[in-house]
Length: 302
Image (spheres, helix red, strand yellow):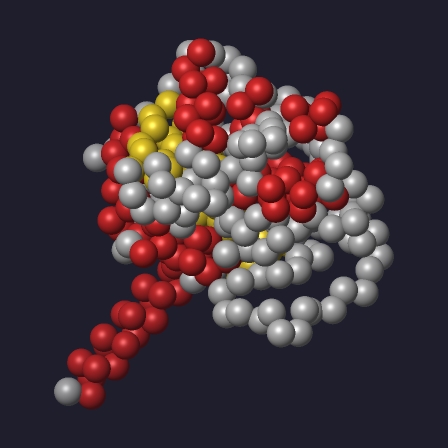
């Protein structure tokens, strides 16, 4: 009996190890667009699973078992209004499910916009997203990934960051001496903030990213429905029609812009669920339509 129990425990440890995270720094040297700062953790706002401050952006790596690997990879941007990261529920939980199903997953702990830590806070998150794409693609061989099947995924404000990475890749905001492509091969958006325009944007996300009085030029630059072009990667989008926090028109307008530019896209709108509706479902359940779309796009096989 002891032998059987030991064997089972050992197998479980091996399985966990195969999917265990390896946390790596995004930047080998100096972090761009950063300034010295003595940040203190906001006492009274400590909530398990949430990240409130990011000075050193990181990638948390979840790799599938080699025999189960599909070659596809997803970089995950948790949401949180550019003020906090819903790191565990949207990031880690999703990454573990992807890895279980053969898809390499990387949870991006990106810098949250802050004038005290950045010289230009609106560019910090995008720099980290571009660096994540560069890092994953540059290490594709090491992680058993197809460099042409690397996507980016985002929830809520993290969806805005993912959409920004998918529409601004032609304008690098990081050093890229090796000229590694910063274009994600696909895009997955879960109840995303898309627009920064009055009457449509999520006000807190806009203020936290762009400041309290952004210019019209800056608003348009970060309204991603205006930035789509023919080279924008194919997208899967889902939202709830009764979302009272981020208006579903964000997803609808982005989808329509993709369609006008002949970019392949799939939009799922559920009548009810509110904001964050996937968090009340098992990951395997709400991610099933994502996998179907990935099969259609030939990102993974059946």
